[in-house]
Amino acid sequence: MPDREAALLLLILCPAAALAREKENPAARVNINTGRAGCTVELDAAPAGKTDAQGRLVLADVEATDHYIHVRCPDEAQETAYLVSPRLGENAQIRHGTTAPSASASAESTSDRALDRAEAKIKLRELVRDAVQLRVHGRLEEAVEELREATKLDPENSDLHRELGITFLLDKDWKRARVEMLEAIRHDPTDADAHNGLGYALEKLGQFGPALNEYRTATHLEPDDPSYQRHYLEALARLAAEKAEKKK
Image (cartoon, rainbow, N blue to C red; front, side):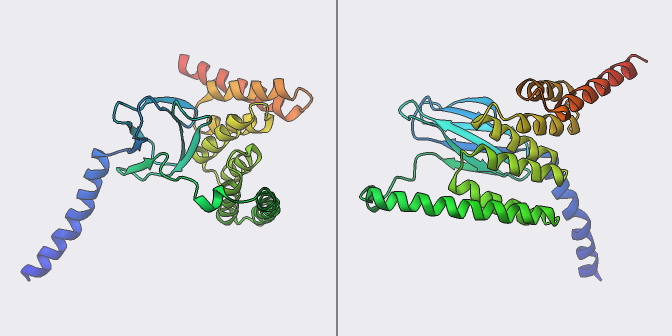
């Protein structure tokens, strides 16, 4: 009998303890280690700070969803993007600059590299084609997996990030859609469809002001597309209605 009572007590207390931990750590942390001071770090599209004298930076209160961490040190020609998907209360780790090109890769001939690029392009087209077909049939998680594989081959391809964003919009995963649309815009600020998609995600997240800005940008980039203007005017009307409701 005492054993049974102890078991019941554990069943009651364990979920309560888990809930308490979740309340204590409602967000995640991302620990960045570059080994160098003064490296610039951005969280999605927002500046997050620079690494300290030890080459470290801690991002606290990071929302538990997908994020792109962009890191660029003073001696680097371009930034590096890291995709992280921290869980509630997790301490995610990023070690920047630890992967150096191998000697064999450095010695690779120009013709070999050209062949690799050609093969990568073929593989990229196949992955995108498969992702689109999966999406048509409602297999959204599988479509995301294919597009993630494609971004590994071409991480700066704005089209791939936009397609990921569209897939998340179809899945009503507004937060992940926002992140992918931001990444698409980062690599191509003139992508009207990405601005429009970002506006839609922001609107669904209740951020009407920023959503309006994105719809307006899409309209300016593609003034002949009536759908962008319609989204802008509809969002403008909803924002006006919301303001009127608050005044009551």
